[in-house]
Image (cartoon, rainbow, N blue to C red; front, side):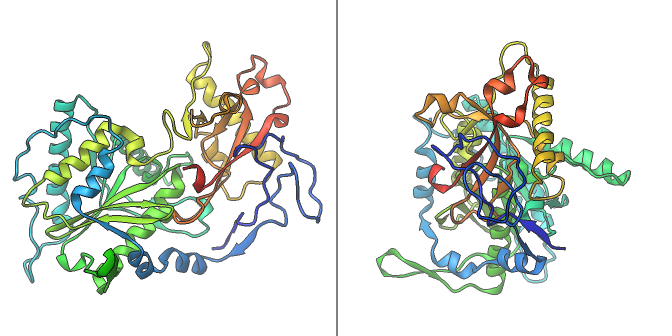
Length: 431
């Protein structure tokens, strides 16, 4: 089923990545759009699902050849560099992952037999770190049975289910899965912003039973690398590339994304960003959990920003702090009114945009901006107007913004809100 994609969409002018020009809701002409006009007419391209599936596969061998390979200590040192004076990790039981079964020819071990002992090992590490470091424990959620759709903006129908997911949002995710199962029984749809696992920041883990699925790196001179990928390894890379680039990255503002691959007795850490991927040497995790302990320590001490999100103090976005007297319920109501006005005045790029945007909530700009008047002047609807479909490249996203004064006005429902609408456009140079 083909859908529209605003790939050639013309947006308002931006100043310091934020348009200060109000949106125009006039009927667009057939001429080139300029200035503050915002319309999808004559600015959309049609493509079918087969094109998008081909794009999603990507040239995986090219991805691998352009990866940066790091030793495990070097990879972990990069993670810890953002943590101020990280304490030493506590001693852990060396047998935490001993229960993960080893696959051998004809012994009947399947990936599903590995999930629970892996989850138990990750959980034991997180809980011990939480007690020692006084941090919220990261949870390891088994997600292999929960298929997650990707957004309408992706323009093709697909469902993904990573095997495990490390996240600080276990409660909302489990609530989502429960609500989804109940809705399925009643044959009803869920139309909320965070209707997918991928809308919650986390580290996906993909598990394969055989060491043959690991990536056979061959070292070259001058520290460059090549890869002679076998069939199993190539399929795994295609899989995690799709998860990261076409499901997880478009669902939430990220600066980078971590993932973990487990291939039998081996484990690797991955860090995906706009310029490519960085991957660790393989880890024999069943012999020693030390590397996994440091990995989880960095995530727990840094929270969602350490996982790679662009939401938090000093980052692109920050949680909106409403004025005294505005309740959470009222904040969401006003966001819904704004989303509905935009939906009525300008046709969104994909179906069901309103249902998702109306329940998404709002952000304010983070303290990254040197221009205080910009930082404090705008409120943004969290669900984007447009989101790119790959982690590689510019990573363009566009958000609907509204003047803060209008959003917080005591006569909110009496004013012409459309005159205070703006487009906030971000791309890779701001992440």
